[in-house]
Each structure stands twice: as C-alpha cells, then as structure tokens.
Length: 557
Ligand SMILES: *[C@@H]1O[C@H](CO)[C@@H](O)[C@H](O)[C@H]1NC(C)=O
Ligand SMILES: *[C@@H]1O[C@H](CO)[C@@H](O)[C@H](O)[C@H]1NC(C)=O
Ligand SMILES: *[C@@H]1O[C@H](CO)[C@@H](O)[C@H](O)[C@H]1NC(C)=O
Image 1: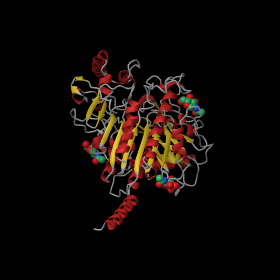
Image 2: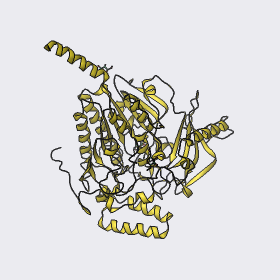
Image 3: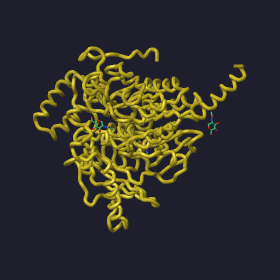
C-alpha cells in the first residue's frame, strides 16, 4: 500500500473513531454533604469555587433526590437504578446500614449495576474511594459483594466507610449505636451475646483493624489505614485512572470520604475556613474536585467527558455541633440524614458538565433522582440490550433542554423497606406535593433530630403514622412547615387519590410478599441481624487472621 493511501485510511479511521467514540463518565459522589453547604446552592461563607464552576459550565439540578437518606441504601439504588428494597438493601428495622466488613450482607452478586452494563459496552470501569456495599458472603476472600464483582474492573479505596473509630481519640460510633439499638429492642439473651462480642472488641481496640482498611482490587493493602494521607492518595488514584484510560471510553466513580466524620485535618486546609473543621473539609473537598476537573481539561478530554457531582444524602444534623467541628447543613430544607422522607435528608446537589454537549449555566427545577444516572449512562453508551424495570429515567432531554418536564410525575421515598412518602408533580402545574404517611419521632420531642439514637429509625414506636397523611406543596413551601388541609387546598382529595394510585401501581411491580411492608421479602434481606453481625471467617485481613496488619508503601505515589 502506498504511504499516501495509508495516511488517508488512517485519518478516516481516526475520524470515525472520534465520531463513534462513546463519552467518558466521571461521577463524583460526596459523603453526608448537605445541599446548603455548597456555594452555588446558596452558601455564601463556604468557598466552593470549583464545584460552582462545574455548575456554571454545565447544568445544575435544584430538585435532585437521593433514593434513601442513608449511605448503604442510597448507594445501592444509585448503582442499580432501582429503589433499594428491590435488591434487599432496604432495612426492616434496627440496622439501616452495614456495620461490619466481616458481615455477610451486601449488594447481591446477581444484581446489575450501570458499571456492569458499561463494561459490556466496552468501557473501562473504576471505583476510587468508599464502597459500603459489602465484601464477602460465605468465606473470607469470596468477595461476592466486592466492586470487582459489580462491574468495576479497578477498585482502590475503603470497602467500608469512614467512621469515628478510624481515628484514635474520636470516640466510637458503631459499638455505641449497636448497643443503644440492641438494648431497646432485643431479648436479653441476644443482647448478652452482642455484649460479649463488644467486650471482645473494645479492650483490644480492634474496630479500626476490622473496618478501617484499604483495598486495591482483591487485596487488602492497608490495615488499619492511615487516615491522614487518604485525601491525597485517593485524588492521586482518581487522576491516575483518568490518565491511564485517556484514550478509551471509561467510567470513573470517585466516591469521596469527605465530609463524613471523622473530619480530616490536612495542612493547607485546617483552620482556613469560616466554619471550623467542617468548613475546612468542605473547602478541601472542593479543591479535590478542582484537581479532577483540571486533569480532565488538561488531557483534552473535557468535550468528551460527562462530569457529575452529587452527595449520597443530606447532612447529619445530630452529628453537627455549634463550633462547626462537625456538620452538614441542609439549607432551608427540613430534616437530614436518616430522617425518612423529610426533604433535608434526600435533596442533594446535582451538577452535570459536558462542554460541547450540554448548555452552560442551565438550571433545572424539575424533580430528578440519583437513580436516573443508570438509564442516562446506558442511553449515552448506546446500550439497547433488554434490562429489568428501572425506577429512574434518562436525564438527557432535561439536561439538554429538549424537555421541560421531568418524567418523574411521582417519586417514592422509602425509609428502609417502609414507604414513607410520595412526591407528586401534577402535569401542567408548578406544584410539588409531598404526602407523608409517617414521620420520625424526634428525641427529645421537638429537638429537630433523633438525638437519643443518633439516627432516626423507620418503624414501630420510632415513627408517627398520619391519617390523613401530612401533605405539603414544596413549590410554595419548600421547608415543609405548613401542612395543607382540605380547607386550604382545593386539590387535597385528588392528591391523596392520585398518590394512592401511584403507590398501587408501584406495589404491583414488587414481588408479592414485598408489597405489604412484609418482613419476609422474597428478595433476600441483606440488612438482617444475621447478615450484619461480624464473623471472624468473613473478616478481610492482610496477614494471618487474627493478626491482620499491613501498611501501603506510598513512597512511589
Ligand atoms: C453555609 O454552611 C455553613 C456550614 O455548614 C452553615 O453554618 C451556614 O449557615 C451556611 N450558610 C448558608 C447561607 O446557608
Ligand atoms: C469543545 O466544544 C466547544 C463547544 O462546541 C468548542 O467551542 C470547543 O472548541 C471544543 N473544544 C475542543 C478542545 O475541542
Ligand atoms: C437474585 O437471587 C435471589 C435469590 O438468591 C433472588 O431472590 C432474586 O430475585 C435474584 N435477583 C435478580 C435480580 O435476579
């Protein structure tokens, strides 16, 4: 072949390659951050210039809703595009998130995540940061719930979550929470065995060893982990993943440990903000987002990369303190993390940037869900293979401005497996009605949070059922402070009727015995005591169990 022909053929191939090339996806998800903490959502004292820039160069969603107000179920729904109870990740009672890495609960191996679907479409897929959706099923190292089993060919980060026990001197979350909940609910015998385990834990201060670990793919590389160096290490991993895959379609989920407690104290950020350690952590997180954006832009990937920024749910009000040492601010919205259907726990930032494809500076007020990512990414990857019923919708028409109305006429709000509230956006109306069937009981009453148990619960004496339900119009009353009545709202009866019908339609899509708030769901419940409890033979470990311990060599990174 003549060299000229080769050049021509090459340029045709290169051209076709560019046209056909599927976009990259970088999804950045922050932990426990309130919508009121971010500059472009109205905070004027925390500096988040990098997040604000993503919003001004892209599309900002003002009514972006997490499927659950807690990490484990919210993340399960996000990844599967379906309400958490469909995969058994909705709690039936006491325990609402996974508490030990050595438990057997987690995202079931037969579940489908959008990462798995993208992998089938030729994507290179990576997860850097927090997972919190389980590790093992039957024995150490089976890794049935591990990110590698769920469509991520690369994983670096915490299979669990950041929590106070990971840093000495920050106190303990898990044991206290566990005992509080246990003593109030279980028979003495069960509590005794729980106590026995606890007594075994506490003196040896083993929780950090069991839960605070770092894995690279299938291998435990650090146990217990050094928290101080994590922000830099995770950022480096995210940047390297992008650089390594710059010339092929990739998905990166960057699941940040910020701004969950314990808060970081990184030199360069400590003491710099106007809101204590929490503000410092917000500003550090924003800097990290800026670095990721810079990496994308400097590699020339911006026009072919959809970047997304969100939080898994709202801020943890019970954890905040007046000095701003901890925090999470949900702005004008009522409630927060673990408070069922109250807006503050589920309305989170949602920002999409994709120069050349999405308009800059567009703002969308319509209801959208974190579960919409699944169908949106599938659509963009041109994945037309059959799939299960999804609870999300493709967001592209709304993001591009081709549609003005959301396809979410109704949206359901679960608290564990219990249907807590329904949102209705009637056609042709601005109203956003929200119907609460029950609300959490605050302790002490009127405190604005569940300070006794540290998180609100969804069942039994922990909630108050409302008949008729509590109804608000979020369009006129975003703070949910003025319940509507038959006298004040002409559409009151219609609201109850329409939402009841929507619930009925939804329930008809659930397995029979799941539809009635049943405790014996046909999809195995991953959040039962039996599955949550720590078992030595499931505990991830580097070295010979129980003498686990290793440090990652970070001198080269
Ligand atoms: C900004 O965030 C801080 C810390 O969470 C909070 O105390 C403050 O009230 C927020 N400001 C606004 C205007 O929402
Ligand atoms: C990206 O897209 C924008 C808008 O279409 C265009 O102006 C810009 O030149 C593109 N940048 C690159 C690097 O192709
Ligand atoms: C996964 O397996 C369980 C049984 O272990 C079954 O009940 C469930 O329906 C399966 N889920 C899917 C999505 O196939």
